[in-house]
Length: 160
Figure (tube, rainbow, N blue to C red):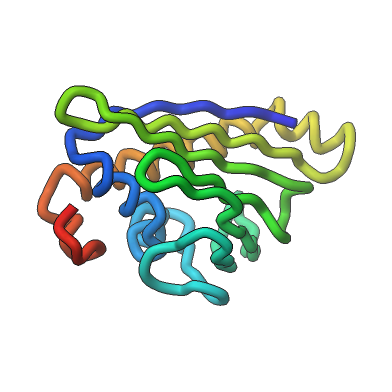
């Protein structure tokens, strides 16, 4: 298994950041570079415990589908989505949120295993881990931009 950990500080209330991070619509807008879109399961709004979504995107020049399920959720501090089916052998993506001054510290832990045994491990070392880190960091920056501006109002209704 490969582990990627990233952190970002977002100058917005924890509830807003948590909800934006589980918004299907914000996810699609934060992953425009891969054309990611929800094609089955929950395709709009906020994901909740037990919800499943199938994403379609182009990664590394290959169009693919990936289905995930929210397996744990403790609003506004934590949720975890796990792969149900897709290109990886498996993954768990943990999202941790904590109050930091007047903002929110977001910690992502993405633990994944590539298919292909030894060849998959080689791919991880050569490029996949770096690619996934860049993908997750880029998504975090867009969530930060949305949360710190009035843009969050497009995704959330309850004023967080």
